[in-house]
Length: 155
Image (tube, rainbow, N blue to C red; front, side, top):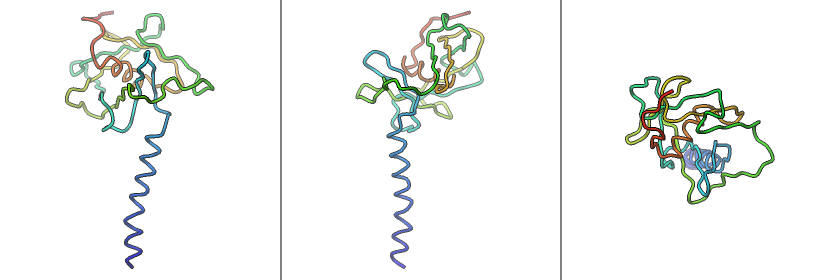
């Protein structure tokens, strides 16, 4: 009976360890390289130095990101055909900035209003099989640390 209790208590711990290792070792998170620094999305909330959230209410936003159909007008463009044979330019290093997308705004974290219209602090163009528009917006805001790119930007 004691063996069964030990086994019952060890199995969940082992399962959690396997899950955590798979999550930490995963390289499938969207990432961008900026010079010597890389910015990567993580689902491990506690490891991220930057937390962003999204809102549907422009009045609650601290950063506005516009989705544009013109790559030339974008501040940040992501165009790819999915995973290829190219080397990973975003290998983890001490200067990697981890960004998490929170369900609710975090104290000090940026709140992003993502739309295709209106004034914007950043404009993004996304045609990707690996990046969503939300992920691209989170990366560009996380890369800048949430600092506004434009002063009272308008379209």
